[in-house]
Length: 146
Image (spheres, rainbow, N blue to C red):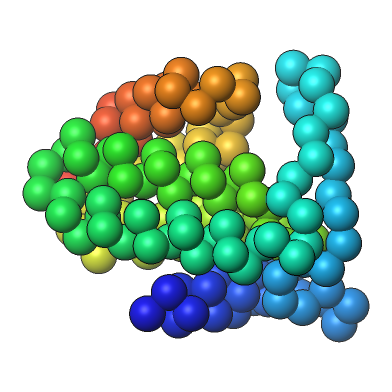
């Protein structure tokens, strides 16, 4: 089941950012400078599959048990925070993660207002605060599909 989800993410990434050089999970170290100015080293390549599997397992559990908006919002926040922290692809991680979440949101009969705002959220590196902020974002931006 989790292998299928990883394969789905890889297929999404290949559609969003087609590249003959970068296919599948990232094979090199990646660093970035966050909006806060802090230098961030993402998950090392040899740990990506394992970390992504753990995130997807927990997300699947939270998502399948989400019966109301608050729990669905937390499940989506959990995935986004973990996915961005792992940074599994060479390019298009934000767009890939967002596309994956939009499919999951649609499956629950919901839609996300202003999905472009998701990638603009400044994560602070404090797991509790970041999850709280992301959960609030989803809680206030999810609405039933019409």
